[in-house]
Length: 496
Image (cartoon, rainbow, N blue to C red; front, top):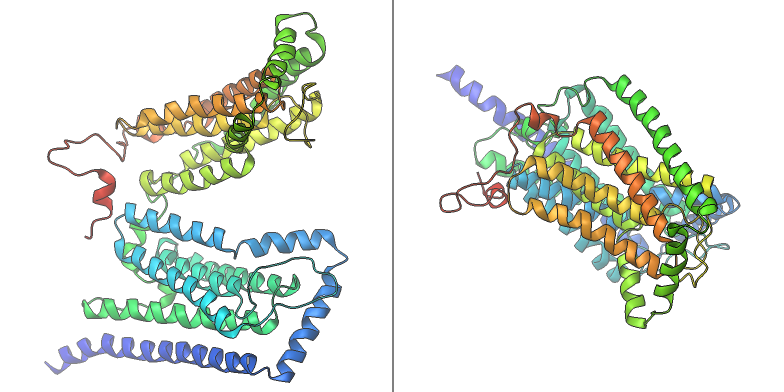
């Protein structure tokens, strides 16, 4: 009996030891933040002098180098609210789809807490941002603490704790090191860009560590209350769900023959470029007197004669649906959902190659053909690329066609036809707006169709994005008896 009690006490003792150590670290971070807050609030002169000296040194170092500033801006954006909110939102939706509501709630609570702490403390302290000789960046609001440092520590730290169990043990320490390096780099970029003092960034890190520690400690206490073991944080919050939250646990190989696939895609890319170049050169310089030349001359002129403020505004919005930001946003939402629902990397690879191939083919053919814009008013002004083919239209076709190809094979729900409708309506709307705005000829639209059809067809033949479905893997979202079963997504968010 004594031996049994000893065995039962051992896990509780280990938990208590780890909990006390973790609580001490969290308390230490909180105390350090409080001390720094008081020094800043009461304007301790040695701290202010050191902060200003570092800000001026970084400004002198960075200002003469434009490419360095560009890199710093790119890194600092990884700690901005748009990126962090997107990451946490996608992770929450994916966890709900994988039926992990507890982890989803943890991410929501931790993320919302970080969002509340940043502006409230900035208002309380009211510290102005650094003033440097040559500003290379700007930021709204007050300076203390750094929102990027706080937000990146909380968001990336919480995501790491949630998804560590999905990684193989040998990759967990490297993952922790990568996240730590990323958070450190984001904080350093805020100092180098002259929008925060060193003490602002340190405060953001300390507050982020304290808040992340509090939420992680609360989650571990919740597990203990339900009789579950409290594993070391190096194993993640819930090690037992590692298989369930892994992106593609059942997919052994993304491509069966990757080398031959790469060779086929390279050869295909060259052939598609040749077809685009031939068609582009013909319609641009050798189609005089033909029906295509008449179409290119009359259609833009017809639209230009019918400009109205309302239609111009509408065309601007439709045109935005096909620009790089909109296409990238849709891709960055669709691809994680594909992983969450269908647990396959191959569809993600299909979409990624569709967009990368479209961009490279567009840039190469536009540079080679170098076609002028239509001889009407160009409402978007001078553009860095030529007229043939339309990049907006080609990107829209490739994106929504790829989505339709995947969804139609993987579900038999009625709403799958919405993806087909989008694959038709979105390109037509973007094409009409681009021609209306005087940015493209009708044959530029034809070139975009040629690019998209050839490239998507090639990818479908080489990548086989729905191979797992054809080989017997049942679609993850199926038609069900609505009288007896709830919708798949509703069931996904139910508590186990």
